[in-house]
Length: 357
Ligand SMILES: Cc1cc2nc3c(=O)[nH]c(=O)nc-3n(C[C@H](O)[C@H](O)[C@H](O)COP(=O)(O)OP(=O)(O)OC[C@H]3O[C@@H](n4cnc5c(N)ncnc54)[C@H](O)[C@@H]3O)c2cc1C
Image (cartoon, rainbow, N blue to C red; front, side):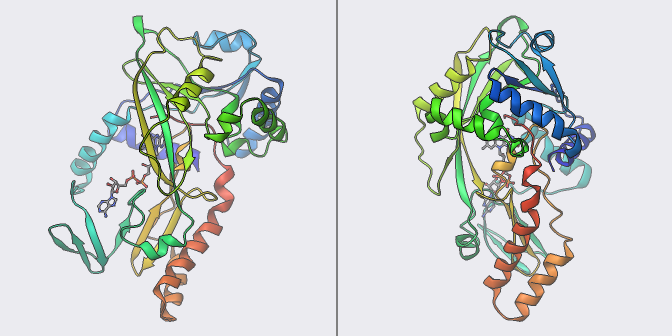
């Protein structure tokens, strides 16, 4: 899924002539259990469609000046990661879609209710044959009944950014280390992962407590983005924890040597997330499809996850129609939720790595 998603991102970036950096990534190993997991993944990866390569410490140093060499055993090199500037793309992609495909964007316009063919917004009433609802973490407003039983929750992530690095210093590949191996589902089939998890639970319990894994990516102006933590819960605290930021910085210092690690920006992300599934697709009413909960699926180098086409899945529409004939709309939506959740539970292991924005 991550690989298919990357292909779509590349097609979009090229069609819209938007800038990107094909940096690749390195998962660094400083401990024997990290080395074991990476070596196991190197055996499994090609069969799962991942292009990856083991580099010894000397080969890593030849590829980047940013990695601390003391204790470095080697790294998993993945050539497919691409870094983009999200703040630029968020502005440019709507412009491209409007210009190329005539998409009309209505910013600052909240949808209050959908009862097709009527869609009520704050100030207007629209007519539509079908609706696809991608409301992100605001999953309670439009269909509270469906989402109460969906298992969705929210996930809060704290993220940091340094100022630009002096003298045009470049990171090279995005960097990840041992903590990320226990976070990315791509590695979950590696037999040595349990041992690595046990060591981290024993030696670094605070990293488990706050769901921290650490990655570093460089932005277009040379700044480094560092993150992140993962706190789950329907009502995340608005207050950020300095202790989490300090844990992230402290872990980064184990593997990164960069001229400027002074933090210039801190923020948190709140995303919808399903604890067991990579995303959620529901059909709460005929011709209405809800797609959300991509929160954890974000953590892919290779870009955002690919969501199945939401308007043409005949099996799902047929199940919904059968349930609707029985006269219970909530049950119809639930049936679709269950069907999609079970259909897609198998793809969860298809993730590799992480990307940072
Ligand atoms: C700071 C941050 C960093 C992230 N980093 C990464 C990363 O590095 N890599 C990655 O792949 N993913 C990352 N993510 C996650 C990624 O952004 C999300 O997974 C993705 O945006 C979810 O897409 P979505 O369309 O489901 O929801 P969103 O992008 O949240 O979009 C939902 C939109 O619907 C609007 N909306 C909600 N309700 C209504 C309504 N009733 N009427 C009208 N509009 C409504 C909201 O205002 C919002 O604009 C990050 C997220 C954040 C916040």
